[in-house]
Image 1 (spheres, rainbow, N blue to C red):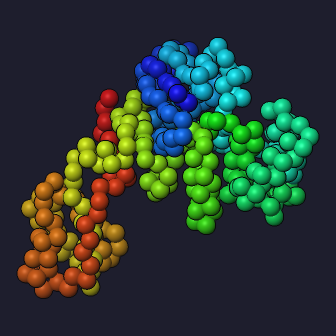
Image 2: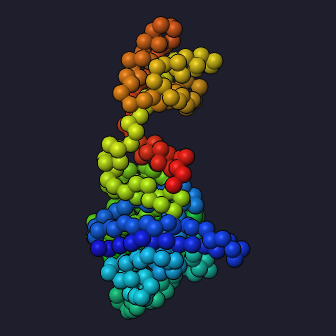
Image 3: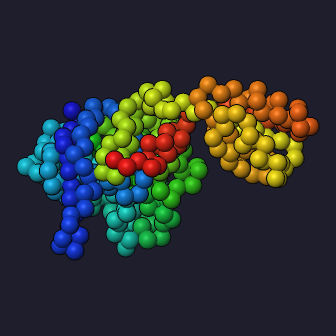
Length: 314
């Protein structure tokens, strides 16, 4: 087992009085070779769980093992077994990119030709050849994220823990880093958190969703879609802005919510089994509205996420 979490709990003292429960008796296991998305609202307990798994924070109760090593009794072995990119990427801004990566590699015991080879491989892997002789402080946020990812990989660890790894990346960089994570995921175990649902859907078969310190979902994406409430979602586009007539869409039987996407496009959410497409078509014909687009959407991860984390009082 690459990552094994059993009954993990973390309490934070508040002004020396009542403790706040940031993580509440959670358990999960991640197998070698899995890329798992770790999702949850801000303050749900994601970063706390990751910091405990990296031996940065001690747990209040429960256990965490990384690559077979306990984070409390074998913390050095844990650190040797994993690469970690924290949410707030700590870098030495006055160091040059190549210099910093060599420094990071030396901390993991790499020396000589091995250190030089790994440094060159990481620079190439994350797309930093043109920036390797620049100071880190001169780089954009996106390129600093690449440097952070390179340092997490420099010692070739079997486990990667990445907290918001794609923060600050433009669409082209997102595609490139996504490919990097997909490539390394063939040989390593990757646990990463993100608020970008498209990243999870593109990279992961499995997701873990945490809310208020507790796990509310853990499974394959297709399983989560099957166990969601089954809401039907349709995007309707009209030639004209409906304006006040938007109320007509809310009047369709079974429709629970209508969201205005722009002046001519609307997203309708209805109860499971409702044939929204036929109902919207009939409405347009009856009211002489020109319907130019109608598309039913598959249950999205974003929708499942909202369903599990909104109004969850666990």
